[in-house]
Image (tube, rainbow, N blue to C red; front, side, top):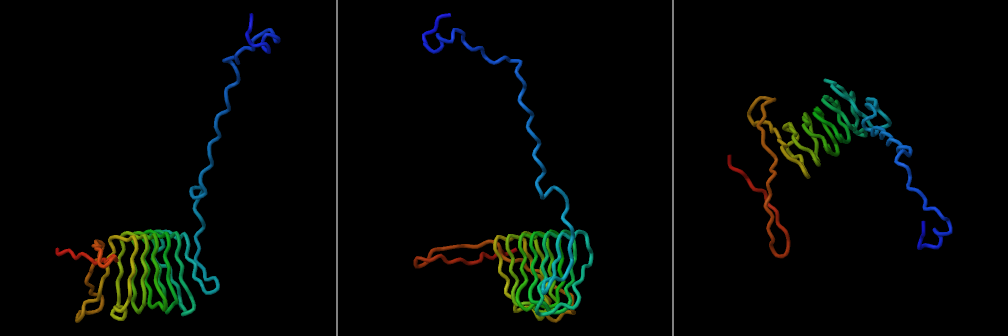
Length: 201
């Protein structure tokens, strides 16, 4: 065969195309499961220094923190369908990435914080100055008569209801009120002014 390319002409023979019978490519290796799916992480309920650590607990009807002290914090993480009872006065309580978790607390010095914990229930029988809610949908908070001066802040939350004790009624009678979700923002004097829109039922 004659070739216009001198290099090929010198070789004399055009190299053949690879045979269709060549070895098939190796099958892709199945990826390993993400660590989150590899198995349940061990549950934990322990006092470490001044921190109560409650992690990955599931289906526990009454985990109790006994003798809480003002220097201690109670930290819940990754729990599901549990109830935690905090006895005594503690510094702070936090819930992160918990689902269907109920917390009954007597008194808190600093704050109670709930983050990414849908369907939570919180009841305060004593006092707490601040409750902070972030990225949480569906929650119920019961306040005592001593806790009506509490400040509640919310960010990216919905369906949060506050149950207030009814004045003149016996203990345990509450009136439920929703935290507003609809806001109106206007521009006044070069600044944004936001007000709550009240719905009349």
